[in-house]
Image 1 (cartoon, helix red, strand yellow):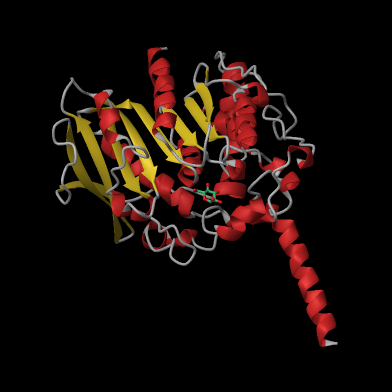
Image 2 (cartoon, rainbow, N blue to C red):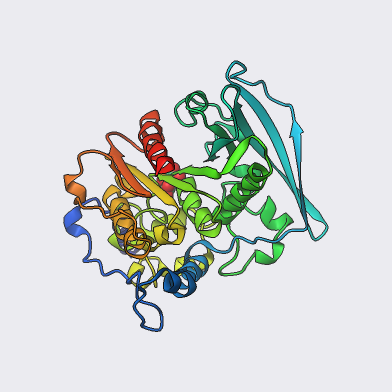
Length: 394
Ligand code: GCU
């Protein structure tokens, strides 16, 4: 009897494991039927900027907020900026380093977060600024200087100011403790809400506070601001920009599931897999779609349109199958219809994913795929910066 039970148990666990095995075969991708970006909930076809901005965009925004990412609260009582000196400037020749503590108060409580900003010493400001949302554990508390992941020196040489904060300055990247930052201190009423503030929303909130700092800085041209995220913070960057129109260019590198990639393809990481491992990233409502991607009232191709007409850039790495490079490309190429059909930009991706041979830099939307693994590399930055120069010239 005992061996029968063991046998049944093993069989059940094997079946469960088999279900969780990621799919990496294109032939096994289900036939995907996507909700139409331009069909309003009342069944009206959306054609003009006015209809888009008054009707369809708010509908799509509301769906992402309630079903995928959760809210980013915008209210607080006060905020103040304090410059501190804790670290040595690694580039004293070419840049000034500002370490800023931003303290935000709400309902008698406060939270302090840290932003590190490098400003070029040569050239005449105000400078365009690039903000990177960092989450790498080996660089705690925003003290990241890594010439590949965050190539400060090269960005400064090219005339940009550049800043970074660590995700954990507002919400730890862990299931057990993600609330131990702004969520429990400043916005406790969000806890337990099915569409409430979670870690991505908290990190996006922090990017907004960095932008508040840039806006009042005489040496920064905040109208030319770039928000950059890799992987989990690429997902965050997209949602942040959908919430905050102050970012001129948004760059999501290898953001994959719940970011750039179409969820319904179920290639690589799935909604179930991401919610199981990272239950604190997205709104609780997102779990309704575990193994039920078809039931989503939206898909990730609708996300770039929430940022339009401001520029959006995606990139992928060939070996990063977990993030579904083809799904990322499809997400942007379908999403760019808002840029071309509503805002009249030259933003039509003409190539199939399989035929791509180099970067595609269109008007306000761009994409590249490089060889190699999941990472944010200098090659990614270099190609992206070509898109930035082109966009700022237009
Ligand atoms: C995990 C996760 C991805 C995420 C990645 C990262 O692999 O499953 O969704 O993008 O971590 O942030 O590096």
